Length: 601
Image 1 (cartoon, rainbow, N blue to C red):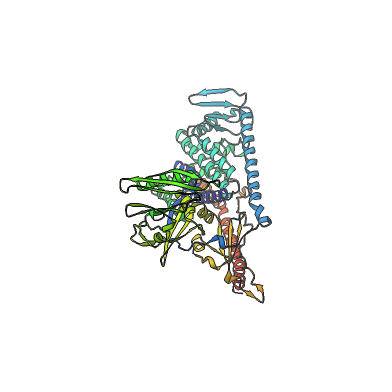
Image 2: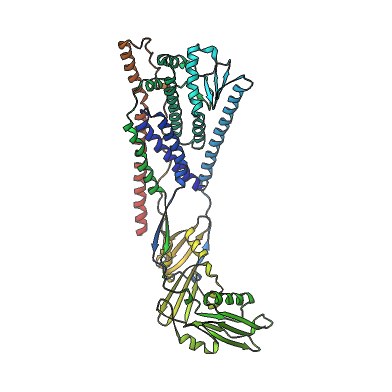
């Protein structure tokens, strides 16, 4: 659930980025087709880029003092659920309801479109299907189908309208409409997606107007047709309408000089911001421990122990191991067991090109003593417990040229085990191995992958302070007094003995919980109020009348200036957000001061 929310937030941020880039730099340019692909690329990028990650590997030094968990008191506890625990579920529920409602509206719009088209006569001309209806509906196109009411327009007006709708159909503008509608359904909570959809639809009208005006001889008549049908507001959803509420902008764009091609550099400005997004939010950091590649893994298997409790399967694994590691045939035969299934008799034969041949036997009425199979200096040596002391005093040399003692202590996940337990461990399950020498004694510490994963998946706190896995493994196990594991919250909390020293026979209180940065509702982003938009100015009847045209152009500029009322609202919105965050920061700083004072006590 959390991953989905993070994805939606990242995608929403990218949508805002592309919309602002279009609104601030491109909306007044006449690169209509380029703007179309820029807006569509913005939607596709916002969906795909959050899946792109750069992996960064940090190498850390391996630890040599794992915690002996067997000496630590572990308790499990669960906490009662608070409102915060239900908040993700309520948020997901609200989001799901919004999506379902918009999907229902989407389906209803398809039904309404089908109701308009059902049973109508279709006239096929070239690649287009024309439907002449009687309903008072604004002309529209849906893929290669063009719908209009011929009774509402003159022949010349109808010609202008059809040329406009043919452009929509030829360039598959319906696909853009459906894609923008789908994004509004998924990202309905983001106010900018609705502005983004409006920008897409408006730009499609610019494209159709621009291309249609090139095919029509009387450009003036085309503009008059636009002004004539501004009062017709009956439109079918999910289609390309001839009518748009921003009719003034369409007329302005028709009369605007073509933008200089040198202004195309504006499209590239979004690339550095996308790169910054990747480096700020799309980097996965993976910590890997350095390993000593010079130490041969045969250090662990220099001495292999066979004891009375070995099963036939375990003996078989020893045979396979010696064959794989040393190319030596190790054969166990004449195996006898007592009533407790303990081995009381066994014969071991070994045969290898480098080791020669040999046989070892141990048979009796009682269980066998431990048998040591030692690989040293290219030779196989098998002995029993009677000469164990001699083996312990011998030294073996690893490939790292460090002298290690056969007398050793073995720890798996912090718990001391026997040689037999280590021999049973599957090498593929080992995450890390540390080999240390203390005086004449060898110490081997092993961390399994399962245990390593457990530490990685949990948040670790020592005396109330969050630490990473490596700090935990470096902690002296003798200083641990108590450890609490919360499986539900996936946390490990450790209290050390220095933190529980008694005073007047009473324990010092557990350190306080660090404060969280305050959260809460943010100011609502402004949305343009279409009711404030004035009526478009009357187009001069004579385009050659310079005085009338100058007056018209002046009104156009004034009207365009009023249309930009939304920009101050956005500035005010940003200021409100800054004020809210500043207040929350002050509250957080006060809480942090209290927390630090409590920590000192």
